Image 1 (tube, one colour):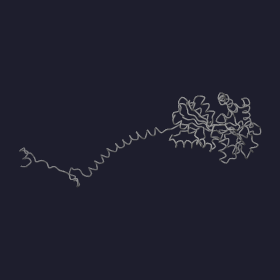
Image 2 (cartoon, helix red, strand yellow):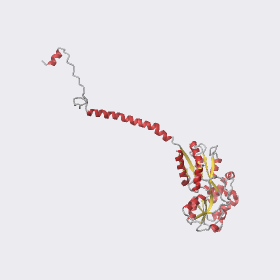
Image 3 (tube, one colour):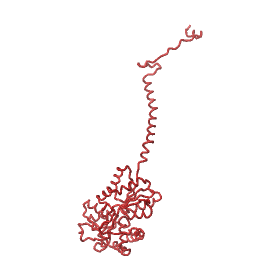
Length: 356
C-alpha cells in the first residue's frame, strides 16, 4: 500500500514541510522564487509610484513660491507725450535702479498731448494711468483744473524748451529771415513756410498764448492771413523741420528740440533768436488721483524730477534748461488761468479758420 495513503487512513500526522531560506549571495533559480528580474520590476513599480509624488511637490512649490513672485512684481503705468527716443532710456534706467517695471503709453505725432488728455479724462472714474509726463504745460494745467491729479504734490513743472522759427540756411540767410511770427504773413513768404496743425501739441498752446498776447481781433486776423498766405499745415513739428531741412519750404514754426535733432542729422537749419512772441514750453509731470500703483507712481514722479534725468534731457537737447525758471531773454508772459478759462473759445476759432 502506498505509504501516503496508509498514513492518511491511519490518521498519521505528516512530517512538517521543510522550510527554505534563500541565499541572497547567489543567483536564485526560477522555481517559484524571486530573481533579479523580479527585483527590477519592483524597483520600476516603486519609481512609478514616486514620480507623480515628485511632480506634485514641484507643482506645489511653483504655486507657493514662483507665481506669487511674478504676481507681485511692481509696475507703474505712465502716459507721456515726451518723444520716445528720449523717454525710453530713462524708463530703462529707472527699472534697473528700482526693480519697478515701467509700462509706457506714448502719444501720436499728429494729435500729440490732446489724445492722451482725452484718454485720461475718459478714464477718470476708473484710472488706468499712474503718472502723466507731458512735454508741455497747457494740457497738464487743464487736467489739474479738473481735479485729475492727487490733492497733495499732484503735479510739477520741469525744465523747458522753446518755440522757434527754423530756417534753411542754404535758402534764406538768417539776416533776411522773418524774426517774429507776425512777419510770416508778409506776401514775400507766400507758400514758403510750414507749421504743425495748430489745434494740437505745442503749436496749439503757442497759438492760444499769442491770442492772449495780441488780443482776439488781431490774433484772428493773423490766423486768417497765415491761411491766405498758403501756410503748409503738417502733422507735427518734426515734419516741419524735415521740410525746411530738405529745402521743400524756406522756414517754419517748430520746437527747439526738433531743430537740434535736425542739426545732428546734418541738415542746414538754424533757430532764430527768442523774442516776445517766443513761448517757453515746460515739461510737466503729475500723479493721477486714484492711481492704481501709488507707491510706484511716487518713485517715478520723483525720478523724473531728479537732476540726472533733467541733465540727460538737457544734454540730448530735449530741454534748453534743466530748471523751470524763466530766462532773462524776451519771451511770452502767459496768464495760464485766464488762458484756461478762454481755451474753448480760442480752440473753436482755430478750428473754423484752419479746418482741413
